Image (cartoon, rainbow, N blue to C red):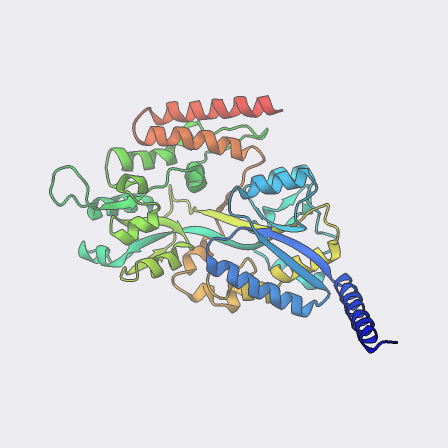
Length: 417
């Protein structure tokens, strides 16, 4: 045989053999798809490191991670309808009731063992992903709201500690609000308000009010529900010691605080790295939200890892969820302070309870109102926000605004049944 032909055939044989081996190797891997959103670049880098560690410990599983930042839930819902959703994905407690009701998620009870230590999770956060006695998601982290305040501005007016009641917060706001030129234009407000239901749900409950009734209809236009909201309206309109971020050209209360346009703001733990990085010269401290009507209250937001009921490799998908929400994976995920862990043991191990900046958030989880209220909450949210802002700026009374929001939301809920 011609030597050149022999060499060609030998080379061809080697290529075919390598290709076959490669194919067989790939076939030994199980690929699990994971989707979520990204709050900042550091978050994705941290998760990438956690996922690589998972793959190292589970060499037969590869994770294909996709970031969806635009219209996240619309994308997930569309893919669920088309049987193209990821195996595992983030699910906010706000959206969970609808997906749990329509059974598009895989119940996790049969996968959870005693070794997994379910009792280690904060009970109220885990409850957000229970439906009809089944667990459909495991919360990966959480955030509550707490009171941020500028220590230097406090000292300037002789204040040495945060307000202990909501009445005291209003009194502080008057002392801290400044009109330098006495021309009616406020240069610095004592307090920042976010006029959204996701921030003010706990204020509705402070005087015994409720958001929805037993049948899932909006029920927030009652006198008891309005009392907490009226406190905000009065502080904004009558006392003029509070402002929205948009009133001063800011995007958030934390930005207002950093710019010196407010002294107090109720924000989540996500504001800590923002203030440190963007406004490093601002000396701020954090306290629990002052009690309203002698009742402790704040909001809590949590996100779970859930499994698509149509996932092709459910055992591998569970291994991923178990790792990410297990003690080892959660510790790695929460080690840099980007998120507060939902496991009590990890909270203690990472000393969150002993960090003065994070203690108010951890304590708040014990009595917080979870941002969740049935499958009709998205509809109620839209109409509440539209009308509450109208009442805040004085276009109509709070009672008229909330009654209009309640009736419009309920007509829409009834029409959808």
